[in-house]
Image (tube, rainbow, N blue to C red; front, side):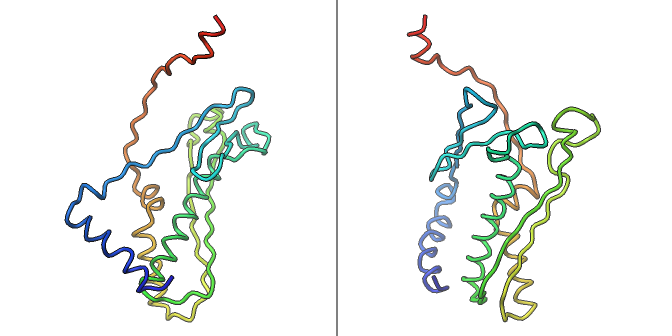
Length: 179
């Protein structure tokens, strides 16, 4: 896709959002179901079923996806798509590019071994390796705008309020049959 095509696709969307700000507000959803036989959660990704489980450092088998890995993968995916969209829109040619993320965890916090150990990532590093003849100032602009428009990066960086609730699930029809 080139810049002209991207702009032509996005132009009517941008106009609609300028005219009706409410139409730009969309709620994304994710849902998972706890596995009955192991410590795992089955998550519908929209394209496939992902099974997340404990990281081996917390007693997991390593066969399931680790939620920390999934977070970093979401960051890489979002940053990569954003990088490509921005480079396309600004006509900054990239022969190739890779995006990588790594994060540091202290599993003592997750396992409750040390009250002073944090639960969660202590640091995350996001790296872009681009093969391009673009001048350094164009690549700096590309990095800056990718950071600015990457949803996952901005969410992690800025933090957002998270409302956590616990609701009772309605009884399953199978529960009535068992009685």
